[in-house]
Image 1 (tube, rainbow, N blue to C red):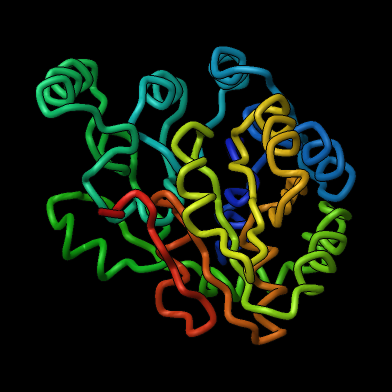
Image 2 (cartoon, rainbow, N blue to C red; image 1 turned 135 degrees about the horizontal axis):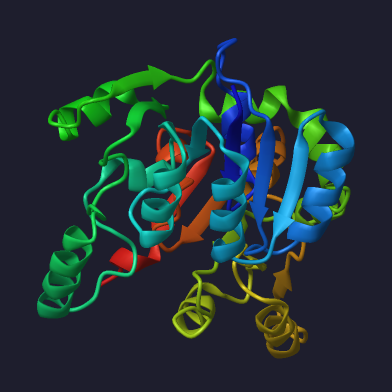
Length: 302
């Protein structure tokens, strides 16, 4: 049976590794060149695993690749766009992987004004695109970190809810050696952050820098050093902008393309207070119960 995993960000590969079943093996890994460090990630991953790894520049290339290869099963984390709607035509079945906070809500990122949002949803529904992850034909199983919570929120979704082998953070810890190999720049940023003697403040940017600047200055005080972790989908020009603006004040831009989760996991062992400022980041779902983190959702500020 030929099957394929599609990764639009690195954490999806590690979530797949958390599936404990002989039936869930993949033939190929398709990496969409949509996140920072995608080239390095795909090249290093290809040297470490037996599967074939393909780096594809856009969604159209992925759709064409899937159509030509006759895969039986598709593994994916996102099912609420036309990209997925096109992909599922060419496979027999779909396994969905947990996507953090967005797997447990009906609200889709990028929500617009109510009228425009309603019109957009009507159009999307007519195209077979549904307003929450995991709904649609050919989806027969959903791997979740919190399956019971998901069942309570979406009891009408008719597929098998399956649990991952380990918790989200336990899974990352289990594969720490692989993470270190994939991201040699991780230790450098760990050393930078650990040099601060005060509490740690890390701001995770959104897809756009425009809405971040006022928040950056609001949380920066004389006694604070603010670390900025660029969103993986920000381009290199955006990151250069960050460096140019903040190079002379108490702000440090962490350039590593590693997943934020791997940085936080290593910082936990030092037992420092870590305030994580974010914009509906999917990772918040997995950290909310941890005593190590003070989560501040800037999307909900007054």
